[in-house]
Image (tube, rainbow, N blue to C red; front, side, top):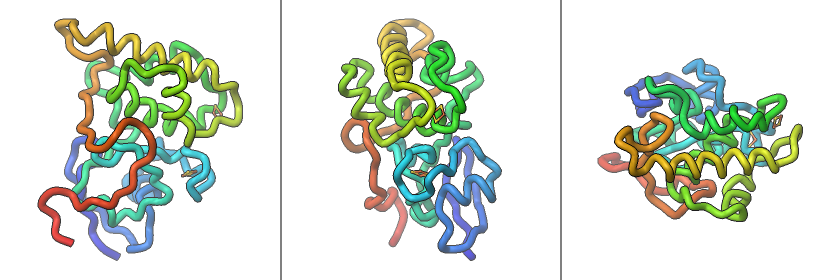
Length: 191
Ligand code: FES
Ligand code: FES
């Protein structure tokens, strides 16, 4: 058992958990954040996707100890005082999901893409969501929703209200889209 200190959806948290627990387990069973879904629990479905330091990771394959000193953002953290994030709103508008189990991971992967490349082509959107499986729907409406979020983000760039959706753009470090590996030490953390 150890106490893990990190930023969670904008707050400093200190959570005690067994050393072998994954980030997904700590969030669901210690922090009470059940938005990130436990689907396959072995890295195949993407339902557990969230952001660590602004990059998409599979939280079922991430040991909780790896996020000490880092910034973790879950689907719950996308909502701001201004309302739902533009990606959440576009998914809602498109009515592109049925059971919704894949939705949080899909939205987190899409959120990263929309932030980093709001001019993404259909192929780039398809690539960015390729680690996220949906067993209920076709993917066409999901891709439509991401295109809509991209379009709304680009349209809002010059607006006095700033970027669409209310949520602050996250910090990003490497590349565009895709799953990240936590192989870097966060600033100021000794190994
Ligand atoms: S629950 Fe993590 S990839 Fe399926
Ligand atoms: S809506 Fe059910 S798995 Fe995607």
